[in-house]
Length: 383
Ligand SMILES: Nc1ncnc2c1ncn2[C@@H]1O[C@H](COP(=O)(O)OP(=O)(O)OP(=O)(O)O)[C@@H](O)[C@H]1O
Image 1: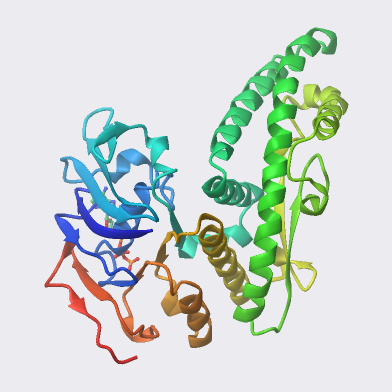
Image 2: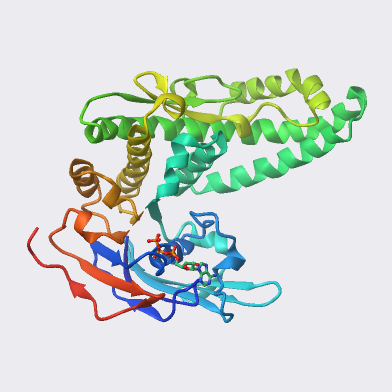
């Protein structure tokens, strides 16, 4: 998948940015606060996902007022497609999306345009709470298995309903009938989510473990463990490829066992919303015992593994967005990244181009105050 044209206007501080990206390497240069990350974020909006740095949608609109438009053409394995996103400012900003000039819902973008990002915030994959890792697993999994997004949404809705019943603090006999309705849904959805997470963690471990070894030059070993609240630790090794009635029953049993304590607590204590992806370095939890460098390398290995898995399974590569991270890596780590992404289209932002390993080909774009300045420069052929 390669972006062949991009124009952005009114996305945060970006004004009239229009460019023809290089099919492989694009370097976005500029001093601090000129709009480099905003440009990657604008590309990312075309995936239909929430901002990778937590910006609310209405805050995409420029402070100066006015509307926003992000438009791109891209080539996937089959054809050239176009996507356009507009937001009209107002009390409730109105968002519109077109794919190949046909109006679409935001969710439709998710199965059309795919990116993988690596940003400084990704350290939270290792340092952050379980929710961050669950979201990562679910998004990665949905890139390969589209129904996953709907499953997670339906699970969350059913969970909200169950928790609403629990909060009423009814006597157990009275609550049982109401809870039963939501338990039936949660056991089906939760088991399917666990199975999909198990499949993805198996794939992730296969790619991420050797990648980490390469990045860390074999000094230590990383391991990944899917901690399922219902199916236990290392559920990636025990769960099958498809949901079975026995697993659904096991899930339902767990819900029934915790019903009394859930009623006391007023919320659902076990289920897919309590899962985690445990990350260990030499057998010890990376979050607590990893050094800052080890955690960064692990976050990088997870993201590169995501890109590689996507490329292998979908037989086409995602667009890779690397925000302000390459300059932070030493030359050996940069070389690993370059090898993994060499067949992919990459956008790299930096204030310090001198700290980057130079790729042979590509384009560089200079951003100043939200605008591209000067013409696109081709990088010299010297490495
Ligand atoms: N809605 C908005 N409208 C206008 N400007 C905005 C909006 N939201 C953020 N900005 C501004 O965009 C500017 C550029 O932000 P961005 O994060 O893209 O910078 P950057 O070039 O990546 O900088 P750095 O190298 O420091 O990471 C910031 O000054 C920020 O205040």
